[in-house]
Image (cartoon, rainbow, N blue to C red):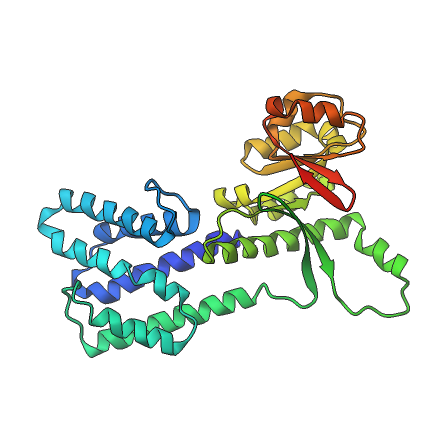
Length: 333
């Protein structure tokens, strides 16, 4: 499976293109619409912005307004069309948040009576737009339903600063003929752990999309990474393809033990160079090499480790966020 985040972005992009083709009709010009779509996706889904404003809708509006002003400077004869494109975009965010037909019908009615829009629409255009938006809402609901499972769930261990460590748990009803020990042993076998990672990455990618739809751009996830995958070229390429998006790579962190890092340093460094966020849990193999700690997104340290105080006293030099493990407790430093 490809990166579902990219698939979702293509889905939104396709909807926006169709939205403007319908509403602009024979006045549609891709070169005028495309900069608005690109900016909307950049701000709405990647939280990439220049204007600083605590209110998201105001920030998005100012970013799109900047695009409109720049476009008008370059295309003065098209100023009215550009203003219409800008005005039509004010409805996109609301359309994305619609959850019922009644809400949608009210919104579309407002759009077609908006005096800031100088376009004239036929009944056919109104019907076509309504059909497009309803189809968009239905497909979005179907997409989200794909990743809702009663058999598997991501257990969460929440830390400060919006960091969540997750682990995939199964809720399958297995035969009582098998002991809990046998089930646990099978569930934690290398091949199963590797396959669990693949499913976990899909569910986490979905979780990030849900976060974004709720305007949550802060939460980061941590999932343990089985280094046995490093020896399986085709399999690791397939699995990491799920994360093959620059934004996802900043939100989903793969955790390894320091011993595993020492044994696979070249391969893990290569993953880091490709933009994947790797975090490390220090263990008894930690050899006080502080220089390599700069590579990791997070450092997990056990409070009882003999080098704990040295790590904490060097946190300004390490410059990577340190999470202290206290058994069932934690403390972020």
